[in-house]
Image (cartoon, rainbow over all chains, first blue to last red; front, side, top):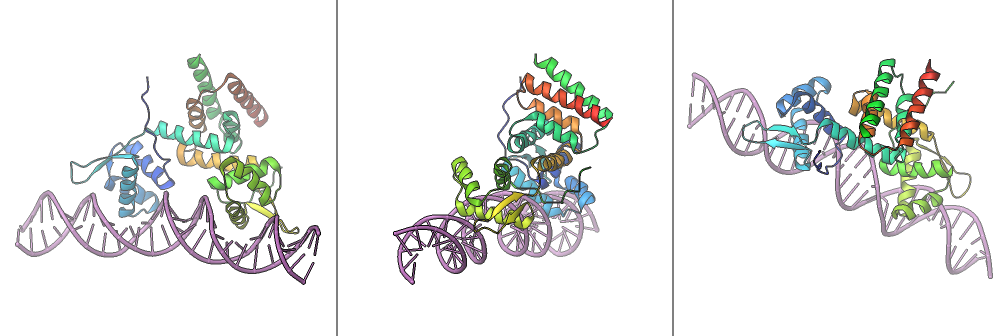
Length: 131
Length: 131
DNA sequence: TGACATCTACGAAGGACTTCGTATAGAGTC
DNA sequence: GACTCTATACGAAGTCCTTCGTAGATGTCA
């Protein structure tokens, strides 16, 4: 069903912020990303530009150069990147124990009833679909 | 009930490996940590030494200097560090949505029935205890 | 005491991450 | 064409992370 995913490096903190903007807005120019990040954290224009260029070099973004202002698109979907990062944490910090990870995720914060119900719903769905 | 935790920097990859050894073996000298890490990944002695010194400077480890070979102890328990790291991921990658995180953690890997049951048990326990 | 083993201290190199200043190129306008 | 606006390209600085070589201090034992 699903194709192979390219094996890409883990995005860094600054890169994740840029990806977040692109996932939300869809493919965009440096200018558009910069507008968001300037408002959010005062990022400089060439800083965003440079980072996005590096991301394209790494393969994290694809670049469409036909127009004067290049348009960038994330190569991985948000969910694939989330999975990549959570798997990494699971491995390095929890020795692969998903239940430990879930426990820690819940213990660290007040989790709402709604959130808890949603988690249960997902467990049901996951187990139902997997068997 | 629980006291305040010191606000420490996030351990890096190399630091996490050292913490892993110390959590497992208890307080130890550089030599003992090095023995484990050399077997596991061929780490050099002074590399481990230097990293542990830096960790002590950062406040991640405490150092007992009465003997010639200093003895190092983690300042935070494993569970506190796990919580710190999972909270960080939750914030930066999942926008605070624990249910999303749980879903991604499960979708990325084949999760055993045993593991699933354990997760459900924890949810029950957590909700029971919190209310 | 002298030789040897064991530790710590120090400094430096190489690489990645982040930021930014400056240079350069293209498009539109008068 | 000359000016201006908007982009990209390039390079470099500063910081952190990781690794390691070498020097210096301390302890042991014959």
